[in-house]
Length: 404
Image (cartoon, rainbow, N blue to C red; front, top):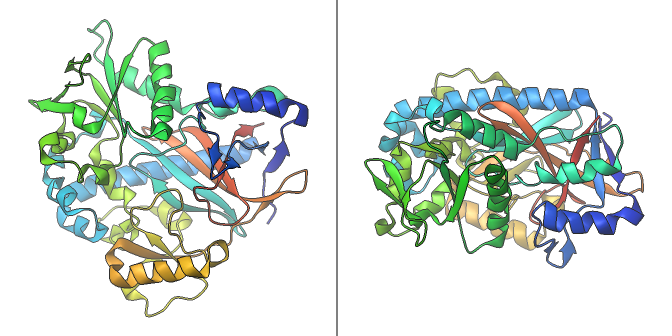
């Protein structure tokens, strides 16, 4: 198969200016990871037909994911198999009043070019990253490539989704951007979205998850200088992390909040990599998931695995602890095996697909992951990361996607 994409360098005499613009205009305040530059010198140029197909698949996957989430609410006992923290599982009954029409659902599906076409590795269902890279970054890159443009803008899609649901009677609504406030990486994502909201007349405040209290299921901010009711929540704090907060933080109020939430805690079901182990018991038709996701199994069902299978942590992010042998050391692989033997419920085994690298016009080869965002089921933007090896992890480089 020929990968229907082109990896093209940004003009060398323009890269310095482009990098500066990305740092300050695309919210990449820390453009280094382990002393490596993470702002790509390339862009991915994509045919319109490829973009259309990936967007269509993402919309189908989003629809099927929502159906599975709602099926879990009616059958919470199945959620035991998802290996979520005990305190999160105990809070699931509070989801009984969930109404998707009152909330905003943001997801990112990760696509990889393979020998037979495309495969997905997972859905980032709870707090998908890459929002600035799928909003501001392509706009900056497009000035160097005539005939190509960004494919969507996640930030603006979220603004429109909130504007449709916010009460028109208020002169100006306030959205709380909930995140781990000690991490600059998280703050830059929130700043990107906040600037989009502010430009369209919606106030925003930055808060930690324990800055919210609940009064009659309505959120109230207790942060000094910003006290009072809020009209909606954008949560960029992983749900399973909430269980680590003290009980006094009142974090369980997120589960039955009567306010616009993105994302509502219902997202925890699809965030678990063990979802495929029980999806046949949900009574939901999910043809796109079964077509695009590699065979995924419980480690206990495998007496041994060979080079055709990989281990993945149930709530892993940014490629951490995925056992692609050619991408990790023997020491790391041994450590992963030991962790699986110790607590297999925290892992899945997945059939490995062969990632097809993309070679740039200047001869460099990279493995690519394309994240396709959906907002309330509609395709909303593309995000790409690339690595010289087939595991897309924390060392990956952010690269903009432009469509002809």
